[in-house]
Image 1 (cartoon, rainbow, N blue to C red):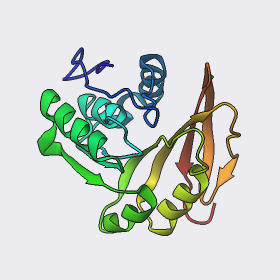
Image 2 (image 1 turned 90 degrees about the vertical axis):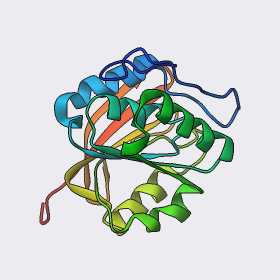
Image 3 (image 1 turned 135 degrees about the horizontal axis):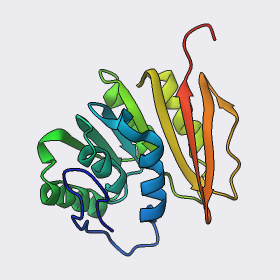
Image 4 (image 1 turned 180 degrees about the vertical axis):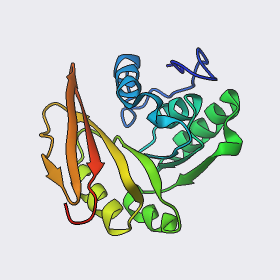
Length: 185
């Protein structure tokens, strides 16, 4: 796995070969960031179920101002920290160890422009995680939630105050992008 573009382009990222971690393929990652384009610049990014941090680090490399990572595995947290050090983004990042749903409340003084949500495919965590994000008001006005999930799982048309704006399939992976609607829409 590597950083595809930006400041850390070509930098190899350490990952682990556990069954709990399914790294986002370079093809899917490249497609995602092509969709987001320059909208990543100067944003605050939240990478949930972060694995080894590949998505959040890619966002930092492409100009995100800061990124927060939440991952439950101690081993993966150490790998995220090592990858941030390798790429020179440690100062722009915060890494939180723990279960995502249990740790989101620590972020109530923050709001994010882009939230990357990549839970284990076999877990049913997309809807409860989005509900918690919206309850805690962690997404900026006009912010985007990106959901990576199996094509076996259906993308929801509308979740909470979100509108599905993109839905693409890449092999066995589905990317769904949700935009936070304005109040009253």
